[in-house]
Image (cartoon, rainbow, N blue to C red; front, side):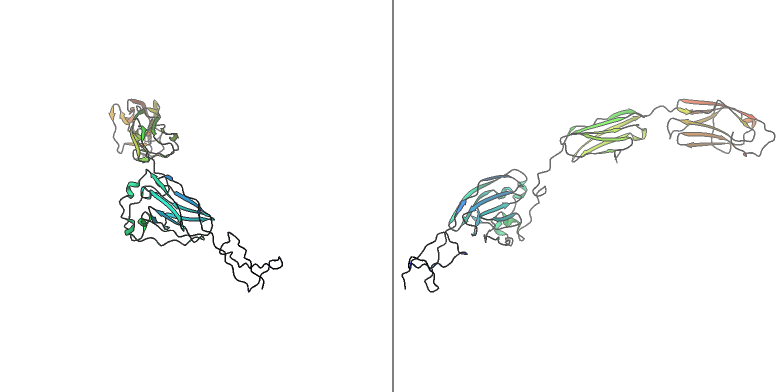
Length: 382
């Protein structure tokens, strides 16, 4: 048998391990199943690039990254000397030779020194700094070692092993509950809205317009308006608009019954003012004729229309106030008022007056005899 010659090939990996048999015979390489086996030695895994120092805002996500010399290797991460394992807030990723450790919704408890290790090779420690926010609410928790760790998540395709340290044990099932942060996870704290310019009270006359303005500290916020405790919606005589930080309410064709408190609110900020509506003097818009003739036994109707509804008028005959009864009927419908005189007789002839506020109207009623005396109360009005 010819003498054996060995051939060493560097950087062979275990999955690709093969048996190489080299024989030097007649200057040719041949292989034989009876020749001795040669197993290559695996190269050690090293950390090509380690993690870097990080500084994040409370509530944000911190990501540490390291790169290995080989894609298949067991990696461990540590915080302050303790191994970390995954949890709902700790995410693991293996991308080829890269290893990522993500800490979600960071709090001041997450600040500390982090390092990674693969075999005898280590990188770090590096520092994680967490700035500001609502971390004070999270600092009353017990030691993480007193809680039961969450079950580890499935291993990645790299076979890397991760363990959770004292920070993440806080969310374990056996640990006491802690207060939730005042804002949604991974979101910025809610901005505080304040009033920069208060509402001013308005005094206007009936039928005029009133404008209210309020300025707040934030632009992207919606405000709401109320008048007398009732919500206002844009449309008709109500106009609502926003110009940057300024919110504007315009009320047109004011009525006396709309006087009251105007309330504006945007988030926790609010402002209040008063609306005063000065009533216009009551006036007659349509007057009865100066003279009216009615046949005996018929019905006489005198009618007036005033400037606004809801007000009362007074009817008089020769300066004496008339009261409703069988003879006189007083009607009101909105802004229209009527005096009905039933079964007119010659003695009903005279001057009738209607008073509305400071305004008044007079009508002279004349009674004429008909061809025959009709049935009392019958016949149309004259």
